[in-house]
Amino acid sequence: MRQARNRLGWACIAGIAALLAASASATLRPAVADAGAPAFTHEQVVRGARLAAIGTCASCHTADPARPFAGGVPLRTPFGTIYSTNITPDKETGIGGWPLDAFTRAMRDGVSRDGHHLYPAFPYNYYTHLSDADIADLYAFIMTRDPVRQAAHANEMRFPFGIRALVAGWNMLYLDKSPVMAQADKDAQWNRGAYLVQSLGHCGACHTPQNSLGAPDQRRYLGGGEAEGWFAPALNADSPSPLPWTVEQLTAYLRTGIAADHAIAGGPMQEVSTSFATADESDVRAIATYLHSTLVPRSQNVQDHAVAASQTPLPAHTAGTTADDRQLQLGAQVYADACARCHDERRQASSGGALQMPMAVAVYDPDPRSFLHIVRDGITPPSTEPSRWMPGFAGMLTDEQQVALAAYLRRYAAGLPPWPGLPGAVEKAKRP
Image (tube, rainbow, N blue to C red; front, side, top):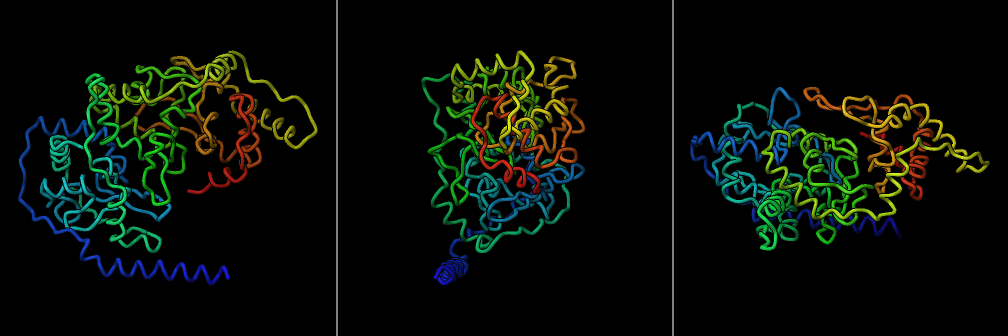
């Protein structure tokens, strides 16, 4: 019976997909003609460069640093793998033939110059809120990059998601093009930050949970999501950060990837901080100001625990005979052998010490993905950036040791109940 229902379900999906494919011409938008080589002022290009840094355009569209903005970066989604496209002004393989109207339509509607729909992995559902002036400045910057000849890599989508006509339906359901309205009771800096976070910065693309169709769940705006297999923590009342942030700390973190009393940036967030380092500092501070207003500090009990527990080395687990006791004893031993030398040393300027674990947000996260990625892969700054680093232990710790370490730190560093399903999470962290 179940097999019959499954066959019927897939038959319905196939039928719907066929109808959508047949109506693709109806959803295809008209192509936009090439308007010739545009001219830009130096000021436009400079403003566009700073805006592109807020949008982290280079990190998504640069697979090879020697070929910036030429695309080819794979983005793995539940619907398949999408590869970023070449946005250099190459006439044949990039967007060299795109007039401003075509570029604006892509940013606002998610429609390419030739009329086909772009997948919302390109976050046009955020970019749609950009002003005309900011889109024009971004266009000026992109169109003055060096053209690179590099054809697009074919996407690898699961059926039926490779049918672009489906995106027209997604847009009808989820594309909200209303502008970000300024709030009269907030100052200019806060309003600038709100505009950038909700548009070009597209912070919600990672930090807001998504529904089954990959659209942000606006009822849980900034309530925590994921990025490339990492957990992106909540930036609202559900923030797992054990200690409150200040605007100064947030600004420093966004621009450098590190701030006093908080962990260093890891995973996809490293690319954000690297990009923000070249953005207009006032824009980064505006983003920090807005996010500071959305973050709600943890209870005083959590804050007191983090401060008190960071004053002394983490304790060993009391001997016991249960499986949990043995696991925690193993975790304590792993921590003492592999972690304590740095993390009990205390992080200070120019020291080799690391942040005390009771202050590290990863052990407070509601799921262990980011913690396990950090343990396995370490944190390595970009080769051109001097910064803190942490070695990866994937080749040194067994799966059992990683599970034990996570369980130990969850209890003794965070003082929280254990993460469920740790063995499965460790197995998943090993996948690319």
